[in-house]
Image (cartoon, rainbow, N blue to C red; front, side, top):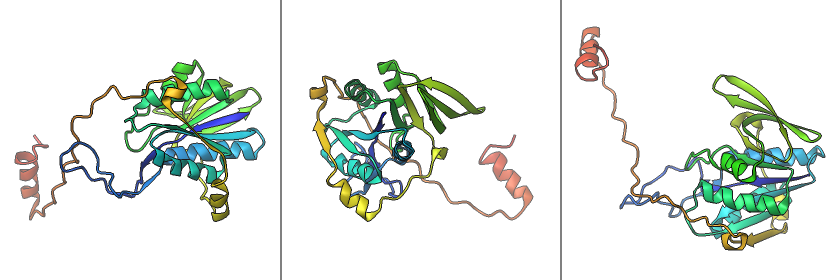
Length: 250
C-alpha cells in the first residue's frame, strides 16, 4: 500500500514573526523556514506504517516555491521513499493545494493519504477536508491514533466532547493531531541518503489545476502589545480599578 503524505514549508515556530513596514505581509527576509510540525507527525506516522510492513512506499508531496524542496528533503531524511514537488510561486490557499493533491491521488492511487490537521502559519484546518470532498474518500480528522486493519483504517479522533473512533474503508484521508506520535530526529546518515532519493518536479499546469488564490491579502497587523501590570496598595484600590478602569466588575 502506498501512503501519500502532504507537507508544508512554514516559518520555524521558534522565530518571532515580523510584519513588513508597509503592512503588506509577513517579513520572510533571512528568516528560518521549517517543516510544519503537524506535517512532521504525518510523516512519522507514514514511516511507522512502513516499518510495520503495512505500507510499501511513502511519498512526500508539497505545493510551493522551489525553496520548499528543502522540506521535502527533510521528509525524505525522516524516512519517506520519494518526493513530489508541485512547484509554484503563487500564493496558494487551501483549496488550490487540495486540487493539486486530488490530481496526485488520482495518479498515484495511494491506499492512505495523511496530512497535518493544519499549518501553523495560516491555521486554516481545511486542506484535508477539502481533499476528501474532491476525491470522494472517507476522512478521519484530528487523529490521535491510527490502526490499519486489512482494508479498513480505525481512527481515534480528538473532538470537543472527548474521543471518537471511526472506521474508514481504504483508500481514505487522515489528518493528524499533536498526540498521534512523537516525530523522530533525522540522523546524519539519513540526511545524506535523502540527497540521493528521487524528487520529481511538476507544476499545477502539468496537473491541469488552477492554484492561484482567490483571496486578496489587504493588510497584516501585528498583535497589540500587552501593557505592563501595576501594583495596588489595597483591596479597595483593586476593586476601584476593576470597577472604574477595567470595567469588569459591576
